[in-house]
Length: 254
Image (cartoon, rainbow, N blue to C red):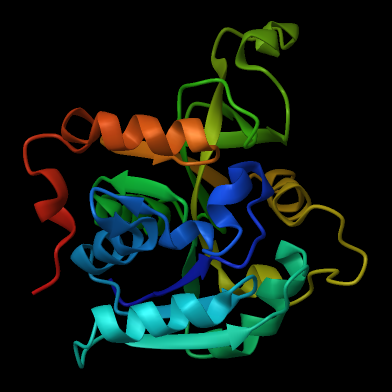
């Protein structure tokens, strides 16, 4: 897959409490490896070797770790200091010039463990000629609810509960949670209102949903977001069940 990945890793992660007072969340460990190790390994296993990182809170720690951990010559890290308290849309605006050679890119959170076939998602994205494809999982969560009809996304809400979607009188409509990974055509950002933006994902996704150009790809595999200390404790306690038979060997880069 010849696309770049923008790996979001600059937030303060205040919900992690004292765990992130000295360490950025993406460097907190799951089975002796930082969370971001799983992110890079997952993407690399799916053919991605260009990683753009909009750094923020304790970004130098992340940069130092990645350079040391992944010395492979075919891995290209681009680090961009985007500020400590910068909102997501302005972080993406700052790294936008580094996407000049890409027709599309992956946008992914660095605090979630994924394990599924991203290449199939990409092929589905291209086949259906979507501007944006959102990966999704069928659970209730505050990350953002995708409303879908067949394979098209028809709505996006930040805090809508799945069980409240009955207000839509259509049995073919169902709600799923946005997983924190999507494929975006670079051209979608060409005319984006950066300065007037309040919530990047909600505003960008809904703009193209209105045009019928946003697709959904249900994840058939592992999805484990780490948003609180309890999540981190649970994933470490249940790592074998979460990662399946291959365990963390799936993410290792030789």
